[in-house]
Length: 135
Image 1 (cartoon, rainbow, N blue to C red):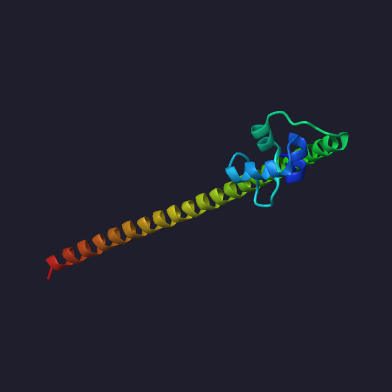
Image 2: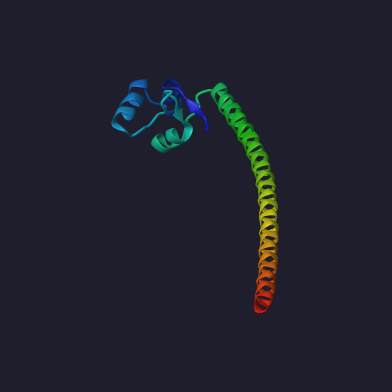
């Protein structure tokens, strides 16, 4: 994505600066908040770009190369972020499974205690009932 000033846009399009401003005002050409105009927007509005000198061509190529290397670095950074988030997610999932297993173990132990207590309670009541027979 190459960005150009109004003057550079006029030179590239082969029109005057006032023509660029008229097209912006009429909505035929849009520019960014910083006042720069995207190369794609120039192509859309004017068709083929007429490069007036080699310097402009070199600046365009350099700008596009910088943009490409920036985007490649962004892709690398985003992939690293994705890998980091995946590993963090897996770690959280392992922790959640461990907590769930601990909860199930506690539940099982409580159930055994309750079953054991009810068994003891039944034995005690049966024993008391048995001895009550002889009173």
